[in-house]
Image (cartoon, rainbow, N blue to C red):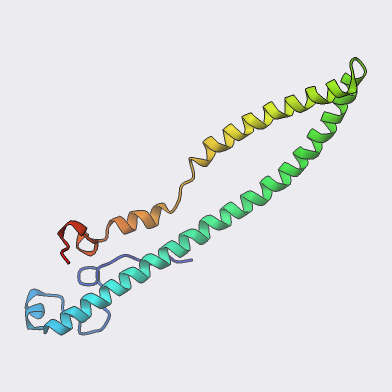
Length: 155
């Protein structure tokens, strides 16, 4: 899998057509229409590259997350079965020394405490999700001239 490269067009070696001007003298000799066409082409290429980078990054992170989710699902089911049978065994053990309803309540309270601890740990771990770091860094490099400045806009 390849990731798109970044470049503005004029200084990075990107040339949408073979006659793209690169020096100040060539730029002075170009018409305003040619310069606007080149800027529009460069901006279009930049936006396409940003979208492709985001897609590639999402695909890559999605594959990792999907594999991890499947493995966690299998481990969770195995853990559930163990917990179920251990709970039944504890319930039966306590049933020998006390009322069956009280034994079931004690096992339920133990599982409620375990569930609360696991929820707390899951919430803490969810805050460490990375997100689209490369795409975010790349978008931050887009010049400020391309970003809207509402305080200077008049209607």
